[in-house]
Length: 234
Image (cartoon, rainbow, N blue to C red; front, top):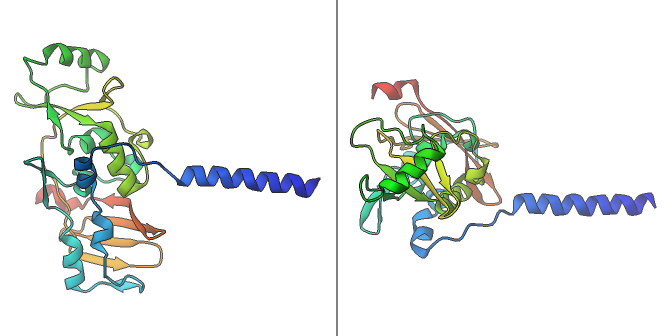
């Protein structure tokens, strides 16, 4: 009887484990799938990371080519999906990103202050502080939540539901969209150094900002990002 119970417990734990590890990619368009891309896997394609140490410059250049490059999304130049994670702040894990800053980096539809006034008024009722203008020409952006979740799953193995800091974001279930004010500044991260150890991959830019990646089952995920104190002076 005890052995039978033990086997049942093992089966239940296995089911829970599989369910927790298998996160389904949300439904998005073909254009959005192309936008999500495969930047981290492409970064390390044909690069030997089996040994601890620093990679050679030519390998680092191959990795860097996938960062900080514009993406043509339906004729509009936008930040590529990997670069959405970098907006002038550190995070100990992807769950600690500021969702507003992250979402505002995405391909979006801009609300018109006059034509969309009634919708904007309703959004402000939900969260009066979320859509306060930081400057006169600041725009309100509408972003597909499924696209946000697809990028987070691809590069961080989480969804926006797992993000802790959801301040200054309005979510409408009716159209499954996030509404945020646009970001005031553009930020970027471009690796200049790559260090390999048994636990993680560490990328540094030329001002010593540090991105840590982890590899699981052949896939690469963002682990943390530490913005250099020198970033404010660049």
